[in-house]
Length: 120
Image (cartoon, rainbow, N blue to C red; front, side):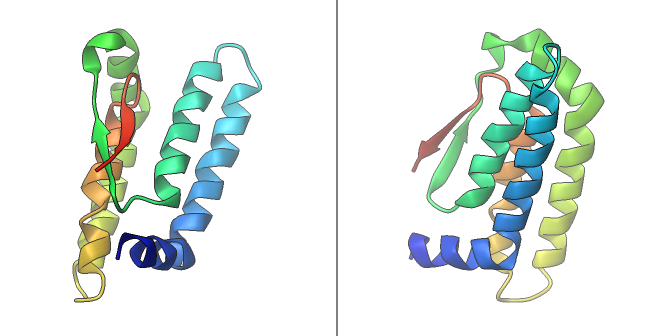
């Protein structure tokens, strides 16, 4: 079931979102200062490829300063946008399983440093 859900996710926006996150990550990786941020964008892009069957393990203690800077400057806006898209998906019955994946993605976009994507 997870495979079918991931394929449907890819077809209806997951692939496009993953490519966009990857492009932004590549742009950040061009500079030395932006390189750590770019790596986190790549992490989010991989989650967008197949969110079903995955869980996020946040390890805030490994990089607390970077996580706070990310959350204040970038993370909260992206997390809210992802959660709003999840609310839009909740409108239809078909979108409910996909809406249940958005809190997972929002959690990763809020605190990506030290976070790990694990199979559930």
